[in-house]
Length: 237
Image 1 (cartoon, rainbow, N blue to C red):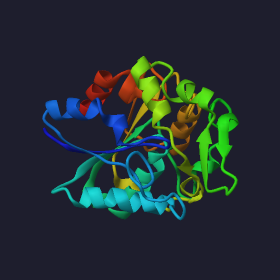
Image 2: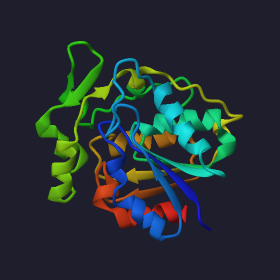
Image 3: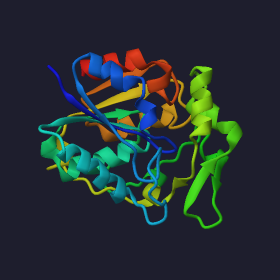
């Protein structure tokens, strides 16, 4: 049966992340909405003052523009976003899909997850004002596109821009009555050094409420590395 997919990109990214997946989902008969979070992609919102709530409200606006319940897909940092959205408007979401994403419990922030196997922490370059961070240029491709075509590797380097840090610090507020009632699915990436595979599995064990887990044989950007496989997973959940 056709669904409406709302695709939420992760940190240091934009709606361009879904450029291959979006038309494939449409060809399968689904409605698909992808958008730039504030201060990402082509969005010109200043990074100063943005919080996780800014991303949550931007996502809610997209959902509320649709006619019925949606499948809400969140990549990477967007796991925090879709979790808080589900808490606030659980009745509008048919299921949550975490794509190699943070899977938080109530009261957690993205900074609470310790990930010794990730290449992100040692390659983070924080701006002098502490508002944003970039990634060391030499680490961008290894983190986001090591198993992707050359054109994609060039794209992620060219589109890299400072990432607001405050959204990583804000804690989600989740309840069993709202967030807990939305069906959840997880797409694990088996060679991930962004949010490492080890951390993904730790979060799944700690959460315990995910209905199904599907593993893809790729790194942190399955929408570029294995778009057809990803679409098959999304349409099969």
